[in-house]
Image (cartoon, rainbow, N blue to C red; front, side, top):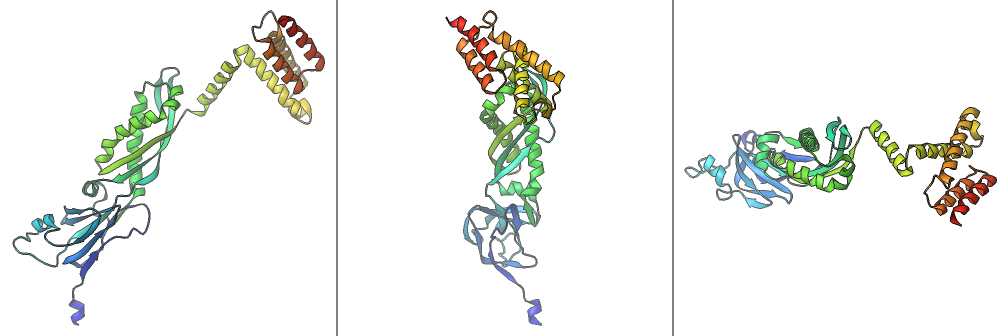
Length: 327
C-alpha cells in the first residue's frame, strides 16, 4: 500500500536524439518531481531550457550540470527558493537540436512575373536549397514550438518556404540584372537573398546557415523561342537559318532506312526542301555574294558530300568555283 503513494523522483535528465528531423523535444516529467542535485546532460548540438508555468527560466548549453540553486538562478527566483528552498520541484524541461538542418528545398510553385530589360514582362521560376539551425531556443519556444511534446522540421517547412518565396519575388521584381545574365550572377544573387532573409529567420530564433539559388528558368514556350533565336544568331540571319534547317532535314531523312518515305516526307516536300537547299548552297558558295572564307566553304562542302547530301559532281562544280576565288 505504501508503494502506491511513494513518489518517483527524476535523477537524470537527458535526450538522445533517436530520429532525424526533430527540432524540439519535451522531457517526460508527468507527475514526477526533480530532485535537487539531479544530473542534467546537454550533448553537443543541443540546448535545454527550464520552463516554469509558461515562463522560460534557465537555459543550458552543452555540458553536464548538477541542478542546484546555483545552476538554476532564474528558476530559484521564480520559485522564491531564496526564502524557502523546496526540493524536489516541478518544472518542464525542453531540449532543442542545434544541428544544421541541411539540404532543405525551396522553389516557386507558381511563376513570378518580372519586367526584364530585354524581353519585357516575363515569368520566372526559381529553385534551390538552404540550411538553418536553432540559435535562440527561448525565441523558438515562444514563437514556434510552444509546449508541444515534439516539433519537427517538416512542420516548419511551409512557413520557411513562404518567407523565401516572398523575398525572392521582391528581389526578382526589382532586380536590375537581365535574365540572360542571371546564370552568371547566381552566387551574387544567392548572397543577396540570404542577407534579405537573415532577419526574418532570426525572428523565429533561427540562423540561416546557407542559401543557394540553383536555377532560374523561363516557361517552356519562351525558352523554345529563345532557343530558336539563339540558333538564328549562330547561323547568321533568317535566310541562312532556313537553309540550315532545310539541309538538316535532308540529312535526317537520308539517315532513315526508307529514305524520304520512311521519314514521312512526301515527294513534293522533298522537292521543296531540295530547292531551298540548292538556292542556299548557291548563295553560300557564290563568289560574288558571299564574304565567307573560301577554305571554310570548302570544309562545309566536304561535310555535305560526306553525308551524301550533295553528289560528287555538285561538289566538284562548287569546289572549282571557290578555288577560282583563291587563285
